[in-house]
Length: 165
Image (cartoon, rainbow, N blue to C red):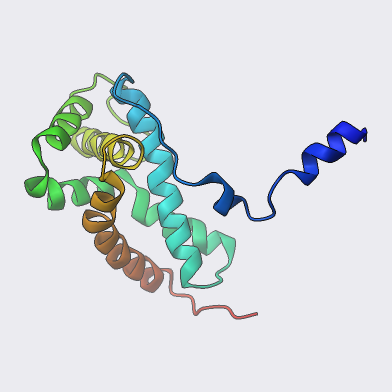
């Protein structure tokens, strides 16, 4: 390792979560597909973080619980539950994403309608988390209570007691 490489490593803070801060990216010019792709990752990250906060589980159970919450059917259900409370800009993102001409479905998705609604929710998540002013607060207000309920149900369905130690 050279002295330059050593200096670069020392400049990296120990706690990366404090160093990064909120990500501010102007996504207004991005395609709705890009929003959905980014929102998919952020939605799953949120679910994983909330599950990890609940305790230690075997990784196969964590994966199964995550899959119950992030599947297209569950995301379509969530969008249906919050859609009436969305503002015009949010509804515009949802409409654009729902109307995408895509594959028509994905692995394991039973309904094209659910797949399109899930894509719309994912685009909305990216809109909130990476674009809209005050969007993160909107995400927390509309999505977090639903996530807590779904995670509770996933934990019960997993049928495993919390592992300690």
